[in-house]
Amino acid sequence: MVRTAMRAVTFAWTGFVASAPGLADVAVEQGRAVYDQTCAVCHGPDGAGGMPGVPDFNDPAGPLSKPDAVLLKSTIEGSTSPGSPMAMPPKGGNPALTESEIMAVLAYIRSRFGAAQRK
Image (cartoon, rainbow, N blue to C red; front, top):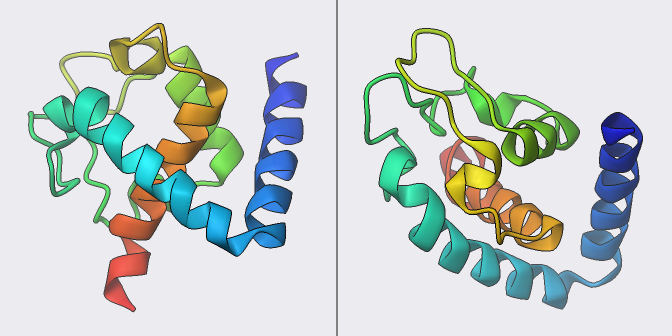
């Protein structure tokens, strides 16, 4: 069920961004605000991972090399990185986060860190 929902969400999100580029900027800005409030505590303001074992978003082979559906699923359900002494809780520990806020965070981290920054 989650896999099907993630596929639908990813397709819907991709269509949204592709059909409304100006709205993509709004989503990235919303994602930045959520990232700063929820994610930066562990992932750091520069995406490099502020704690031991937290994945580096700037690593070309790191989490941003994975498809959106995988990242959305692991964010919603929580995950543990190899070598990490702790797991990321579901929704980054903020149960109030909506799927659209999580998708906005993904848009933000893809635009801010990793390959997007190396171009």
